Length: 258
Image (cartoon, rainbow, N blue to C red):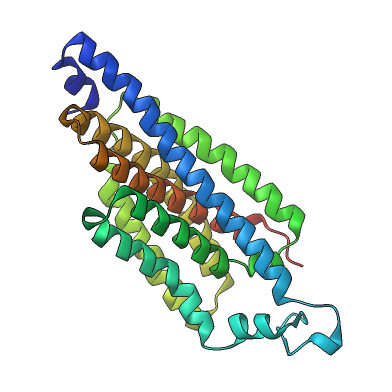
């Protein structure tokens, strides 16, 4: 049942209350996501600054592009620890998804912010590999695209839930292709993955926004505020992942390397 038909089954007063609650719920989703994004990029910028140096006497390592690394930089970019750092955000996502029903909403929010911090560590390399201006430009492009797609998902009367299965299959395909390309190192495959990645996560932005809205409308009349609070956090996580992945793929396409 769509959210419109669900609202029609309720009284006018209840429908008005749910409409007001929906706006507050979406504000909670976007607010939590925005704080998480701020944590991620602040952490990535700070860590990248601590990881590199221009003083040869302080350098303990070097990347292939000639960037001199501090002890911290050598540790997180050139040792096996880099694989732990790369996979840590994925562990947070699976862990939070599996344990959300056993956690309080306050605990779930703290875990989400810890995930955002781990993501900042894992993508800190972008501030070393790309110019600051191109990162800002791509971030603005992503923000505008995300806002438009999310607005579409929120306002459209069309049911786009059928897109979900195809988009998830697309994400799985991207992961498989990315793993294969680690060994092939093909620039053409990298370009194709980036283009498809942008399109897939653009679709997921609209899909996830509509799903968050529909889920709230269907469940709000039960009056379970704790469940709705945790639902807002999981919604923020979904949209955060859509944004960060779209940003990273756009950065690969349009970012200017140092």
